[in-house]
Length: 384
Length: 254
Figure 1 (cartoon, helix red, strand yellow):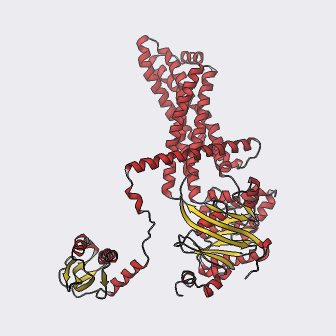
Figure 2 (cartoon, one colour):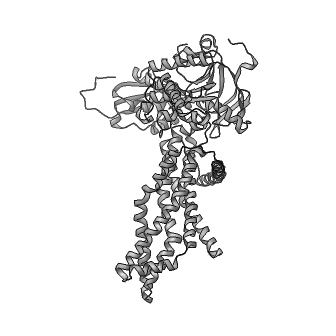
Figure 3 (cartoon, chains in turn blue, red):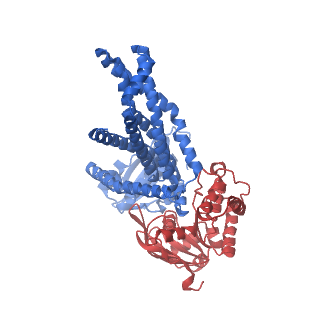
């Protein structure tokens, strides 16, 4: 480093290319080559070099002040250019420190098989890749579902591979702890159903049918759907994040090498949990929704609690409840499969866990919506 | 140099090619690990050492070729044979890979409950002994998050040793350990080999450990994507004609 220029006002780094002989050119560096002044642009210099095509390049640094990485970056780019265009570079006049840093930077050749190529993919290419990924993902999903079925079968034959305490904790977490949010949502949804229906029914003086609307609506469709959406966001996402983190932490690998199937040990208890808890929560949500409808009917439309109760009992029978519960059961399976699948497929970084969680919720929603449509149509056709 | 006897081959790798995300990482790997060997998989960072290890323990299917443990190939083994193989190996992962929702005792108990008929008292005693062996006496009820990285690694070793496996695999055992713990681990490895006849396979680039305990090994190269040397690391250091191997084993001072 030179310190002769400290008293003068520092000038930002500048360079000038001069021809010494027919083959040799000299690059004269002057001023302060500091990062705070920015890094000099090499493009005009490289163009100049391309035009004059020298055989050799040397440096003159007499007018150069302080330097730091800014200079080294500039020279590094220059050297790479000279290397590919067969221009010999005489680094002899450069400061010792710069020479050593450049030596370090050029010691290992750049990796040829790097991942730089992936940036320039055309849109068509990307669409194709994504579609292929989806296509290749389908067998993996199917295999996972198959593994789950086999594991379930083994468990039913009495091969319990997971710990009872794990199941108990999972049940507690997915069930009782979800009660507040399930209560809130189903109460509001029940109220909305009642309000919207009542506004129309009041035109005909048929306010008492609020009970029918809310009762059948909640029990057959909305209770299960709302519960499923809450659980997908709450518990399904948690499963993906938990299993994904275990993947990052090599815990899944450790299980496998211990000869314990992650599906039997991790997925099955979660599947069982949701198979049990989503229908139970749905029953609860139905009840809360009906109470919300009753609240609206009593406070706004002057229907007595007893009237509402009798009307609800008259319209609801067991088949409605069973339809709702069967939907809840299917939703529960969907959520558990989506959450655990995305967790198991998780990559090995923090970002991958985030992606797995997002993907779990989205996948759950898709499964739920498809299942809901199919079952609604099916039950309609069967006349249940 | 060990004399080659057919029955003594514990692990055999035949013409193995390992791929990761469709990219070949290592190819044409052929080597054998004898019973009781301390076998070192050496090589610079990113050359595929850990990927090779994941093939040896059956976590990844070979792109080509096969891995035989006790003359049984992972790829063609029946479910029972696979179980049998897995029962006989223990793996210490780079981070320890303890189950974070379980205490150390529960971590070690898991394979014991899974594979043995010991009652809870026997299991408790065994856990206490295994933890003492790795210098973690009295840590039974701690959770993995409550202990340091080095302790986690040692607890991971206790779990890997729980079933007295025939083969122990180590992925970078000394990474993250202080010099003394690292030395202690080397001594423990030698003891295990001497007293239980355990075959040990270690992925590492820790030169001190390589020379202190390794009696056989292979050297992987990232550039040529295959093994470029095999044998006793000490002898490789002295006799190898390959400049890459000499450079690595002599810290570039060859």
